[in-house]
Image 1: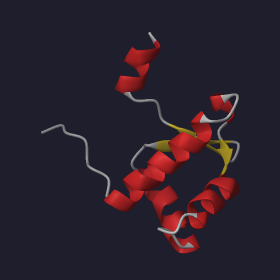
Image 2: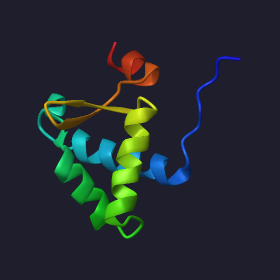
Image 3: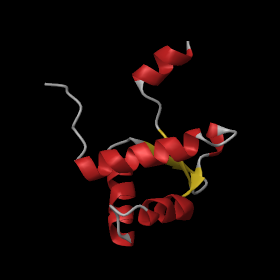
Image 4: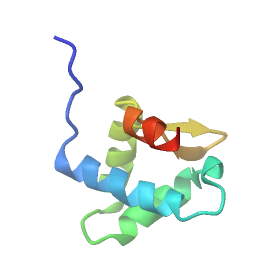
Length: 85
C-alpha cells in the first residue's frame, strides 16, 4: 500500500506556521533561516525550543520541508502545483 504517512498534529501545526511565514515573504524561494524557523515556532505557545527542533526534524525526515544553504523551504505538494498551473 502506497499511502502518505500522516504527520502528528504538532508537526502538522508547525508546517502550517512555517508555510504562512514563508508565504508572507516577498520571495517564497528565499525560505526562512533554520534558526529563524525554530525561533518562530518557539514563540508559539504550543512549542518549546526542543519541541520546535523536533518538529523541524520530523518535517525534514518526512519530506515536508527541505534545506538549501540553511534556509528552510516548504516542499511543494501536488495541490500547490495544480493551483499554479
